[in-house]
Length: 449
Image (cartoon, rainbow, N blue to C red; front, side, top):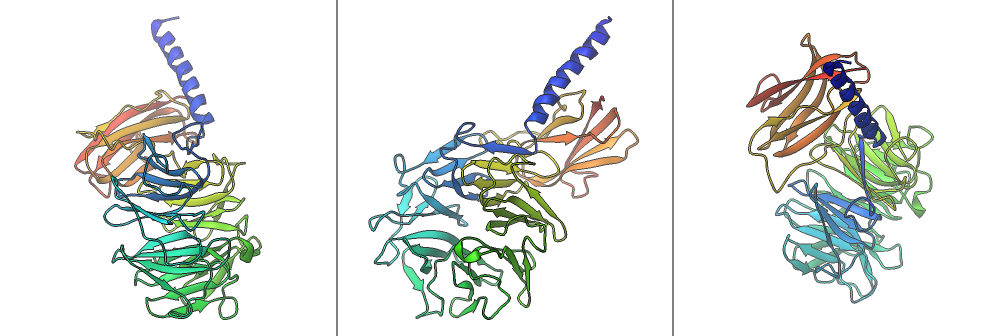
């Protein structure tokens, strides 16, 4: 056997081993749990993402965790000013401050804390003569915090406004808002607050007046609204969960008519909806209480669960979508999952040591069959395209076409449907078309089947 043939055989064997490892890990999914990461609890209740791309993860009993893409930092009652380890919600204001709502266990515990990255401030108690817990936080354009709460061990609660120093509460006596517990709040482009109530339906509050929609006066299919998201056309998407939800699923309200989706008339696999997130393309992502994750693009439904994806728990509690279109999915007892459809999960963005230059790395493994990894670095925030071409110059696929922050990125390409041969991959930075830009770099790779 010649040295050349021996080298080809050796490379092929290495490629087979690498491909087997990659495929077995289901490269579209990454899971972080207590056994594989610094996550201190697998019960993830909420996720918020700051402007630097850091993930702030609240847990039911595990406190608060910060994940910067490489390192984990855990804050709890033993090492920080966090007054409770039962974190129910997180909101981040324009200054990067983290507002953290918590379940409480008694009259002496405060339900809201502020963390500015260095210092903790425990906020004054909500004016209540009974224990309560904070279930949601929304921040308006003036920086006011709109807070939904439950009275402890009950279905009742209300809405509060906290301006950083003082509380105002809203109920039937001063606003017409029914006195139900509030699990969710969304603020539209006009500053109106859309308030989901656990038994009271949906309320629209403009700061002075309240309009209530319920099963008696609207197309709302249930009075138990568990989550709300507003799309870029102003449509309100509402999910139902818990005792009042019965079997009602999901509703959309466009300010004039109601559309209901459930197991009987759509691809929704479960009517118990815990959370909703909407990506930049307008796709709706629904987390279900036992049904896994559902994607609705306006026409078609796709369901992801333990049987066909990297999810390790079908009870989805929260979803957050980062600037790279990765879905960060918190589960009841399966930790944190990350998913990017149609390609790999964005692997790493280095915040502490930023790249000094543009760099497109050689793919690995190479030769490959049928998957390979492509890595590149960019020194500043720019629009980036990463395209694959055949030797005729025909575009085969577009792996990346979006604005990315400075950092180091890695994507996987699956060429399972293509013939063996030489392919080119080209990085173009600074051009929306990808044809030219501040930096263009091309490399070759070999698909060997």
